[in-house]
Length: 333
Image (tube, rainbow, N blue to C red; front, top):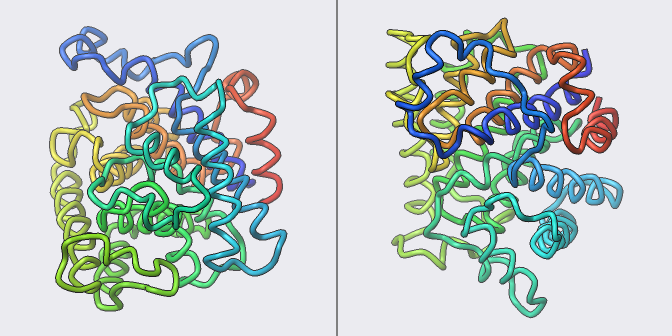
């Protein structure tokens, strides 16, 4: 089924679909009416920083795995290099988030430890929008996948909710790629979040990051993130209990500018249309919030579920960064 390829193509397609609608008022979007289901992929199909940073992370992960089993130092070095390269790249002109920009500038200073570069006050969605490749890596233990997802987030977004949401996003991609049925996801994710809260802070992967925040202990720091994500799972359950596929998906689960809401609303879009990946990404793009990031994650979930065949051939042909997306997908398929 080429689920890794489907995931990477889906996130880029969702990103490109959501790019034109991201900053539109919802009243403007409503002029489409039911025609949102026909939302076209733009020509040219350009992506945003969401896909660019996903590719940066994916390249770093590939380099890290070429050097041996995934571990904190082996992961940090190449991913940090890729993030800094992205920062200085002239193509980094797609309205990137300020947290990513400021943190990557700090990461460019080799004398700084990454924990000093991280923004522990930001839980923007800029970390979990790019984390899908972590969920695609074969052979990782649960702890390694969780640690890698949180560490890649912490390089820029060190808020505990950003860490937890990235962890949940990568885990969701992994479950879907492993063939877990969509209807099982909410309960599986709640079970995972509760167990992660009990385990607490993983200093093997995060070092002294928590010491840079104001929490009384690393456990309190970690709890804060998982509590936010558990509340988001409550909102997801409420939205699924009374589904409104024609309504704004942001109305219950949030607009997606922050990490847990981007995760929850993207998952809602996918779960409203679990067997119709194109409609799922269109629903994410046609929303009142951070539509490119919501559709990007919805596309990743749909692609992990349905594989590369989920996406129209003409969309795949003209999506920006197509060749690299296909190359990385083939590596992990």
